[in-house]
Length: 488
Image (cartoon, rainbow, N blue to C red; front, side, top):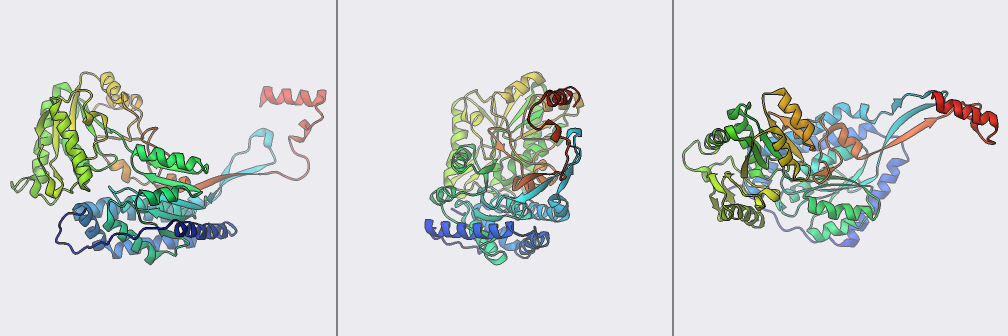
């Protein structure tokens, strides 16, 4: 599936994984998890796992760049920022805070429980499955792994078969950094994923589409396994009449075009105030030329744009574009494509009729429908006709407008006058809302996702504050209970 490239990366097809070997691997990790559970948490050992991972990434930067280029011609600077830097940031942040996160957290004592002391004690869940996607195949395999290891778990990673170069690289990474009892990689197609999902994992972390997320959740329900689902959806960028349009255009184009639009939090469509639509579209065109056609040789000649991951998704993106055109949408910018390169030009669509597939399906490509609104309630209502988005981007210099949209549009996360960046903030819990996901990742939120927060209460021996209400329920006991209900 990879494009022709001058880089030397070559990847052989992964050998089929047989079910017995998967089950044997799972059993080995279960035994290791049980062993870890019987001894006090060794935070130094967890930290050393993360440091080994960080060193491997630093030592293999070129190999990571080559693998991403081989799979979908991702520019090296984008790989550095979105795959390598983001993973290293998560590791460094986790190492700085691990001891505090893992420490039992004292909680207060209510008056009826005077004499007790209580705390919340995080403990590892056990054996976890990470199913990673193809769009950010390195980062979205390793970012949840960082959280899982910090919490003290053993892990099996199932990388996407759509990015074979990166899948092979992750397999090599894991073999060189971890023992199979700690972390293992299982390569293969959906049949292998199905086999894995039949096992009673203690937690499943899945990143992908809502459709597949439902399959994962149904499988997890068979074992009452907890899940984190990082999904997607149609994330809007709302631009009001007070926005700095040049600034908004730069950030929207960057957020939409990075990774060729194959980003779960990419701006999926723009809602712009009708009085500034044309000016915003002009600014978007100027930004595209400045970013991707500075030489004047055409956007297709740019080495700053990734390609669509495979022929199936290339045809899918073109299908969205053709459907919009046939329904009467206007191509205001772009619209060209090259099948041999799986290249799709950044494209702006205007006057897109309701019911067009590009307005109904997650685009996951460099197509940008631009819709208009007359007032903020109308904009909020338009967004809320769809399932809750993974991200909401608000471009406005009016604080009241910002707060109105934040209050009236539910979303997994939001940025004011920016796109994408909340995903890279390690102290911001990242995740969706309803259709766009369940649970949170990154930083402390990721650590908690892979932890069981055990609630512990310690009572003194002998007389306690509650013994006066033990049976038999005499009149005196009833009087005490009444007093508790009235005053406490």
